[in-house]
Each structure stands twice: as C-alpha cells, then as structure tokens.
Length: 485
Image (cartoon, rainbow, N blue to C red; front, side):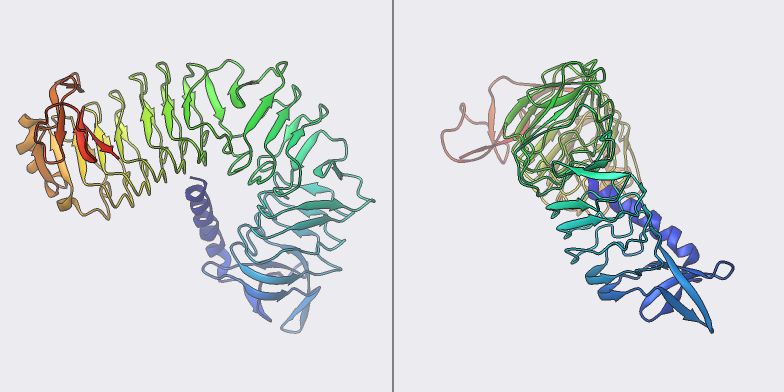
C-alpha cells in the first residue's frame, strides 16, 4: 500500500509546489526560486514538470544582469524525474532538501559536492542508485536521507567526516548510536545490529534483496512499520529477549506486551500462518509484500486490522476472521491478486476505502449485517467481481464513489429475501442485479451471520448435488465458491 501513501504524499507535495510555481524562473533548462535579498537560488520542480536526461546545475545563474549563487536543491527538486546524469554545483551547494531525488529513475551514481552540509529526509530515495559517497562536509542528515534505494550496493564516507561513518558496510553516525542505511543489495545473509545502536532510521532496511536475517538488540526501542518494507529476502527478524519494547516469535515482531503484531518479514516462506499470540492489533503494513503467504488464520481476540496490513500479499487465497474484529482499515487487502472470495467478519461497521484495491481475482464478497457504511472505492479495479452478498436488511449508506468504475449491472447482489424490494428502490444499490439469498446452502441468518446446511453442495447455477462432487469445476459449498481441480 505504500504506493497509495506515496501518491498521496506526492499530491500534497505538488500542491505545495504549485503555490510558488508562478515564482519559479527557468534558466538553461532548470527551474529556480531566486532570493533577491541574499542573491541565492534554489533548484525546484514546478507542479506538473519532470526533469529528464542530463542536467547541469551551475554554481551561479544570471537573471536580469544579477548573479545568484545556487545554494540548495529544494524539497522534491528532482522527484520522479528520469535522469541519465546530474552535475551539481561544486562550490556553492549547501543543502540537498527532503525528497530531492525521491523515486527518480536512471541515476546509478551521483557526486555530492564537498560543500554540502545538509541532506534532507529521504533525499536520495532513488530507484537506480548503486553507490553513494558522503563527503566530509556533511554534518546533518534527515531520517532516511540515504535509504530506500533498491539498487544500492555500497556506501562510503570521506575519512574526514566527523559526524558519519560506515561500519561493516552500514551507514551510521560516528558514535554508532543511529543506524541510517543498510544497502539493499549489499552482499551478506545475516546482520546483527550493534548494541551501541539506540535508533534505526525508518528506511534503513527497506527493499533488501540479499539479507535473510537481522537481529535487533535490547537498546533499540523504536521499530516503525516501514523500516523493513518490501524486503523480499528478509525471512526473520530476531529481537533480543532483553528488549523492553519488542519481542519476536518465529522471526515475527510483536510489541513486548504481545498486543500488536508489528512486522511479518516479507521473505518468510511459510504458506500457512496462524498468529503466535492472540494480539489485539495487526499493525500498519505488517504483512505487506509477504508473497509466499497463502492462508492466514487470525485468532479470536484480534480487534483491529490496520491499513495496508496485508497489502500485496499476492499469493494470499484465504483469510479466516474471528468475530472479535471490529475494524479493518483502508487498503488492508489491497493488491492481493490471488484472493477469490472473502467473507468479512460479522462485527465490522464499515467497508473502508480501497479495502480490496486491485484484487484482480476477487469474484465474491460477503458483507455482514453489521455494516452500515461503505466508503469510497473499496473494490477499485476488482474487475472479476461478479457477486456481492449483503446481509443487512437496511441497505448500508454509500459514499458517492463506493462502486465507482464498476459495471454494477453485471454484478449479482444477494440480499435477505425480505429486503429485495428495498434494495431495488435504493439509489446505487438498485443498479445491481438484486437477488434474494437462495441456492447457496444458506439455511438462515442469525444475528447477521450465515448459518449453513451441513455438507450441502451446489453447482455454479445453484442446483443441489448429491454430496461433494468428484469432478473438476466450480461449485458452491457453505456459501462460497469452491474450485475443484
């Protein structure tokens, strides 16, 4: 789901850029904001514009006969640009601002001038950078200033730098109390964070492709949800038992009180997973990109599944929900490409925005009677969705874009028999092919839950069969489509 948040962040950034876009001055293919008092210039990227190719930023630019020293790259200056090379000012540049090269493509290396003192947050979160060299002049570096570079193989720091250094290939502050970046493609399968480290930058272990195991010491008391994001090789994260804030079980990270599952490593090869503890919360992006995972059993006691919790679990086919779940946040199951059918738990009240975004195999969804509201586009790009069962006798309230981009007439909506006419008379709901719940093995509805006849099978057209079929095909059993291969 990270892409959704990056899109939102990019939109906000572009909106901010738009406020000063009219003040940007184009000089020799580069946009600047000029400070007439200090006679300085900052490189910017106006809304809707993206740099491409070879870029040369000189030490000074001239406008209306006045020279301006180029001292900074502004926030998002080369964001999402497609560059082959960038030459930065060698004598005047002081600041490389936040997100300066965020999601830029093409650059494999960049020469940071020895005049630069500050590197902003996520300044070099670029796709293709393979090597970074930090000059001696750099004294400040924002969180993840160097990080989230999926192609990064190595980092070096000039010997004269008194603030930062590289230790066993890993970028840290000189005292080794802050771990800034573990290069995503650095050779090596295991890594133990030094016991001197007390903080780890949010992007420090992102997009790893070689590292399979990392051990976190007791001294680290903050682990963020995006710290290990999209690390396809990472199979286990082990926490020192003496850590007061976190613990681990089978390589999965929990809070010390075991109330929250924080991180399930994306490279873990387990296909069938049952949570080790009856946690209350599955945290933001906890299982994101766990591509081996096929079945998840969530135990009773879990109340909240947070946003993007299972985002892009592309092999996930089955999720067993307990009745204790009351909240499933936005995009929790976005881009779960193998998910074909889902029965939502009986005590949630809302189907949140982009909940099943881009679940391209999703064919059927059952919405419990407890749901009173369906937010914006929960089924966006679920192009195979043909069946929705809604157990509420009163049609849930809909966001105006709840079923945006969906061909509702091609989707069968099953509702309680006594509610058919109500749904047919309700705006938006009436645009579905509304049918009464029947022919699915459902015997009754008890407090919003389906009660099924035992071991009753139907063919795809709802015809009763004599026992479990022994031929290949798609059948209905206990209200769900079952594929027998």
